[in-house]
Length: 135
Length: 146
Image (cartoon, rainbow over all chains, first blue to last red; front, side):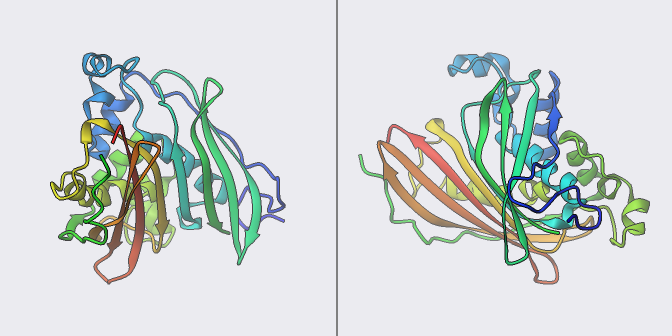
């Protein structure tokens, strides 16, 4: 059974549609401006290398926003997403595809609980994430 | 050196954020949102909203400024240079739309130490101009080598 506008089958194990997005070279600069997070590890290649990173890294909260988008697109709008918790792991890099996937774990008190992750090059950069949707 | 836990429970001054239509659109584009309720005021009104809707993760924009003071509070002694963002949770109430005024109050939920790492957990509570809680954020920062 699917609710109106929703692309989520509510039985346990049902997958939500994947979100695939490749952040371009300048994404971190745009997200810094949009979010107000100007930490130089995200926007300054020299600074990032000087503190031991491979280069500029993605903002974890941008990647979390991709996880959120996967849920709201699957559910049919922003009003359905009631809770999202994530763990950040490792680091995301610009110009490499990010893949968000998820599957229904259970339905509790009318809320659908989704186990979801974000991966880049096969490595989880957001893990143990859990979303609650009201459909 | 053990982490300093005396600030647990401390609450900070509220931070007011006025939500602008163009800021929502800028944020929505930066995170790849395409739903017109975020981008087009006519579409938002046709869907029953007063103005363009903030994507749920726009909570970062209105609530993150409240978490700066605890991170840099000398009483907490958090070593910012060694800090990584370990985990994040948001729980949402009614949707935020352009024109809303959001007040966010941050507090120190927990400070602990495990395996040489400090765990600093801050909570932000955001309410709109009608007093409705629109978001509760839980920000877990991990400091290596405490």
